[in-house]
Image 1 (spheres, one colour):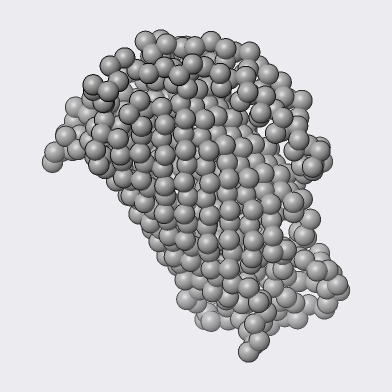
Image 2 (cartoon, rainbow over the protein chains, first blue to last red):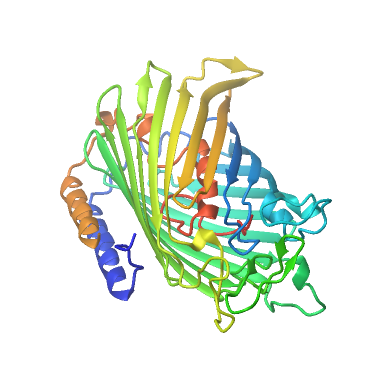
Length: 424
Length: 69
């Protein structure tokens, strides 16, 4: 862990140099117009596709940010999503998705721990109304492909809403395929214009606002470059730059100072202040993906990402997956993911901050930790969609289960299922 | 780490000089070889963008939503 250092100006030059080197060497192929272009165009999407996804997620731990770094993190979430892709003509596709996330959170319930029937405690959920919420999200994407299929532009609008948070997003991308479609370069950008409803811990609510801002804006820009390396291997490199501005702390997350005496009500320590963080954050992520077709039974999928930001966080992520083919239709997908991060400069645990500090948080998502995730997936894929129901052909079914564990005791588990049908 | 990344990029550069023809892409077109994540993979990765400080460079969400629960 100590070996990881946040990226500073000098290091970012190397990353950009590496990325530019890769792009410069590979993007040199000749543009080739497909034979017969102009006389026949294959549709980008032949028929409408409907994808239904759903996941069940649960977590638990003892370092809830709402209660200042000590307290239950128990949470359950059910998240169904429907995605419909419609071909508008030979070149254009409209994709719309709608998702709902319904969650029950013990730590959120402790925004007001005193509205339940028993004694309040950071380690017990309150039975009050703040313990559950519904997040609703909608996204619409329009994409257009050129006649030779070597240029694709797309635009996206999105919106989401939950009790204390609203988000509006707009984005776009341009993809250029080159070198007989061996090389693909995508430039993308997006902006999320979000707004908080300031909800404070119950004991800190007065007539005065503790925070002056309510807006949180995120601006993203990125490059993605993919390349066929051989008949069996392909790779991609991604670079994402994100800048966030505005209210970047969470209004209802408590902080306790080491130089202020604890005050208990029932078994619950009353907050000294809410979390306070800088109003700007710049993030840089660099990722590489390499997929190799080993033989007719095994495929190797690997991913690595380095992340850094100007709050002092640096992280490495490694993901390995080896799909195993079971006959013509099924694949079994065991996977492992390793994640490690350093702490944000403003992080300390319960009673770890001093009241003289300017910025402070006890959110363990910003703490130093290592996480391991094991997953197992089972996929069914029938490109010809032989199995049909009500005019729709079944194209794929996916099931995935995973377990996630941090070295600080936090644990999570998830089951996700999805199926895709195609209009016949 | 920086050296590793540079080495990876150089290795990719050397290999990427070949051009794979359309009729040679049978194995590359295998669904398990796709570089973009499937719907279930995106769904499964959502919580990571909330529970971890890092995000981005993985064809996933890099902004929007508070992730505060």
